[in-house]
Image (tube, rainbow, N blue to C red; front, side, top):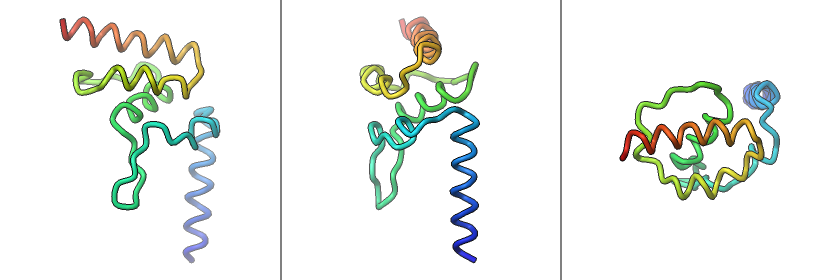
Length: 99
């Protein structure tokens, strides 16, 4: 029974990655991922970037907690002009709200 569950999870992840055009270069890139108690967890900056990449027009209530220097370092993972435009739009919102 465990094997069936693992296979279902693997298939779900594979399908979602294909649906969102999430390639291996993003999915298996460990930049912005921390290991905490034997579990890999995305930093808030990596989680933000993944959301920007996956969801067009997503609304974030508060961009202040993000480290924009880390975001700048991590954004190279995604290699997308559309993504970079979206990210720049969020950065402009951040700057406007935090002047």
